[in-house]
Image (cartoon, rainbow, N blue to C red; front, side, top):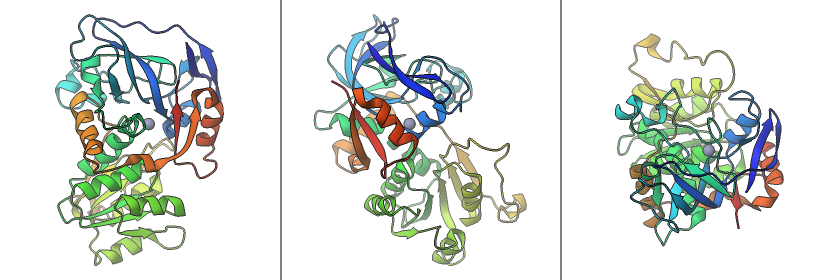
Amino acid sequence: MKAFVMRGIGRVGFADKPIPTPGPDDVIVKTTRALICTSDSHTVRGAIGPRENLTLGHEAVGVVHQVGSNVKLFKPGDRVLVGAITPDWGDPASQAGHSSQSGAPLGGWKFSNTKDGVFAEYFHVNEGDANMAKIPDSVSDEAAVYCADMLSTGFMGAENGYIPIGGTVAVFAEGPVGLMATAGAKLRGAGLIIGVESVPQRQELARHFGADVIVDFSKEDAVARILALTGGIGVDTAIEALGSDVTFQSCVKVTKAGGFISNCGYHGEGEFVHVPRVEWGVGMAEKTITTGLCPGGRLRMERLLRILEMKRVDPTVMTSHTFAFDDMERAFEVMDKKLDGVIKPLIVFE
Ligand code: ZN
């Protein structure tokens, strides 16, 4: 089969690989749609160290090709969503409710990290019964594939921020994760959602998903504006959806005493992420910093798919580009270099 791989740091291309075979609990999926993620670029740039001939990608849907002997819930031909994070559910971290950290910190993240990813004609899913969900007939593959990571991670931002009904929320950066955090804040009943973003196309999408006010940090001081919008008190929840030290500090500054700073961003640079001491109430303002990695698991994915089935959110408006799998090199370049106003490139398989 054909696979799109990381050859080494900064180098990608196609490779021929054998179709994987399932262990007793595992499933082999024939890919139908995939999405490229900014974290695929991070990987190729060396975020997880050198990798040779590693198949990229972690966001995909497909059709069940083959199941292991213990698999009960799926059979060949089923249309399935596969989580970007595929934990080992017997692991102590999973048992304690932190399945994304199974085996090691971030250990639930296996695709394109500790095993081959999903940018291939077929891919392997560990513990298929627990790590996949059937896609409802009324939900398209294109919509469902957004649940693998974008809805799960973005909604996690809202969930970990404990947004009170009618509460105030600031979402820092309206990329795909920030956009889904914005949609998640709206679903959780936020009373005021402030999106921090400078790119007009992303500002427009943020409004579409529920932002009431857009703050353009390139034209004004985002912290001052958010404090002004909240009567000088700050927001109940600030969601960090970028992964920058400066943005993280802004989140702490705009959060009210007792509020939550919910981090979704990947902090890939520098030795430290800084907490501003005074705005943190010199450590005593009861501001809680929460972190998480895209939650996986069948039950969660079934809930996310229900959101699509009931038409609460339509993530497909984020699809800015569509490429055939054969054009993967170009698609990857567009995402890696953020060309042509890219939001999310959809990859269509045969
Ligand atoms: Zn992703």
